[in-house]
Every structure is written in structure tokens, then in C-alpha cells.
Image (cartoon, rainbow, N blue to C red; front, side):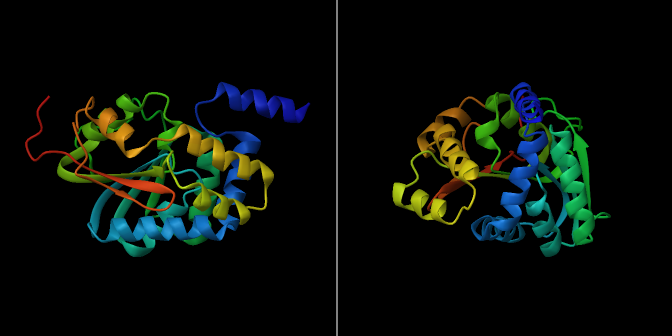
Length: 229
């Protein structure tokens, strides 16, 4: 009965809740490839900005936030998540890592962020794009809360990832549920062409650049110095 209730709760939620959130957090912590992806993303961020106010959309268990905080001690970082379970897990992980003064959390929907216009120097999102039910609205909200002439970085899996690379990663995932989750997430994600078409209908209009790796992509966005609209 408990499993049925957790499943129903998940199906009603736009975020990752309850049992599913806890299992994902365990997977994220215990899988070397995932830990490498967090450090890689944090290195990308640290290469372009050294201080300021940062926002992560959909931080989940907060491992990306922690890696950014390690590399950019002058950053003040907020994680926005719709999942109360994930916020609780993230706060615990941040506290254990010793970054509670640098990293805070807000509960909210990315389609209507609880922040003012032009509030952040950098916005990042890792692995949540394929979960966005209204991606146009989320991209427009990222545009709104980002300061003019500043960057955002959205990274995610890509639908056309080579099968051999997906199989290679799957072999290192112990949980059958997470192996299924990986393939499901790839099926729900975008190709480069799909992202370019999607962005053309947002306030960003286009990406500054898109970088591909074995399994995913890094989508760099810049808000103009004198934004219109």
C-alpha cells in the first residue's frame, strides 16, 4: 500500500517526490559517472564567472550547487525546486558539506519563479530540462530573472546520444529502476535541432552556443545588455 501511495503521489507531482526522490538522491550520490558530471558542470560555470548571485533551477539533491560553491566561494547560491522532498534532501546535503551559509533553497514552480526581474548574475540547470512540462515558460522565466548581459547554462541529456555510450553508462548503474530511468529520460530529452527550434520561440531567440558531449549537451544562453520585451 505504501508503494502504491508513493507512486500516486509521484504521478500527481511535477517534481520528483517521496520514495522516487530518495532513490534518485542515492543514485546521484553513489554513481561515479554522476559525480563526474557534477564536477564537470561546476568547472564549466567557474570558468566564466567568479562571483555574484547564482540560481539553479531544479537542483535536486544539490550536488551541483555544492561543487559550484567549492569552486566559487564568492557566490551566493539559491536552489529553486518544486519538490519539497528534494529541498529537504538538498538542505541536508548542503549542511553536511558545510555550505549552509552560501546555499539557500526556495520552493516554487520554474514557470513562475518567486524572484524579481534581473535578480541573478548566473542561472544554471542540470538534468531537469526534459522534466519541464512547459519549457517555453521556464526559458522565459530564466530570461526574466537573469541580469542583462549575463549568462545561463542549461545542461541535459540528449535524445540522439549514441547507443554504445548509453549502454556503457547503464552497465555502471546497479539499480534496474535507475537504468530504466536513464533510458526513459533520454527518450524524453531533446536533440540539438529540437532545442534550437524551441529557443526560437523564447525571449532568448537563440543559444549563444550549444556544446555536445557523449550523452548530453550544454546550452549557453545570454540575455542581451539592453533586453527588449
